[in-house]
Amino acid sequence: MGAEMPGRILVAVNNGTYLIKFVGDVRVDLSVAVDDFFDQMFRETDFMSVLVDLRAAESIDSSSLGILARLSNKTKELFGFIPTVVSTNPDITRLLRVMGFGDVFHIVEEALVEVGQFGELPMREFRTEDVRQRVLEAHKSLIALNENNKNEFRDLIATLEAAAPDSK
Image 1 (cartoon, rainbow, N blue to C red):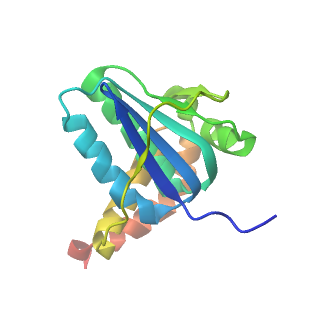
Image 2: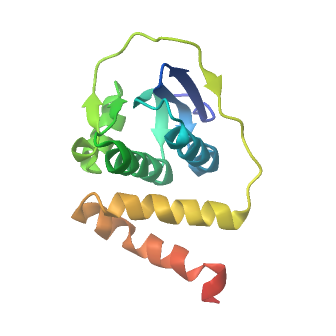
């Protein structure tokens, strides 16, 4: 098996429907860009729905999963529905289900027809503190999903909270 493809996040918008496509090895370094995009997306007056496409994702880390959990929570809080995630990779689908995503996303395991053109979210310069805060928030969203996640990420959250600049 070859090396994993570097992660990318592609986006498309059509009449208020947002499509976010994760490609390759999706890691924490993309979290700042996608988190900012979600904030911008929710401010758009034409926002109608959001679909997350994980078909081209080779792997996805827990920080990225946490950001997706926050996406679902915010969508439900602001608009009263849960988003859809498409995953045709059995390993990623299994990970989603174990992490409790079946409760906060509609999980579709069949390929969809691609619609529209994608534009890639640009990589941004980021401060270490910005990443620490986003990773902390992402993992707090994960532990809110179920008890297994709480046990899995409790120590990481404690470590991240202890590393906060104001905790020293």
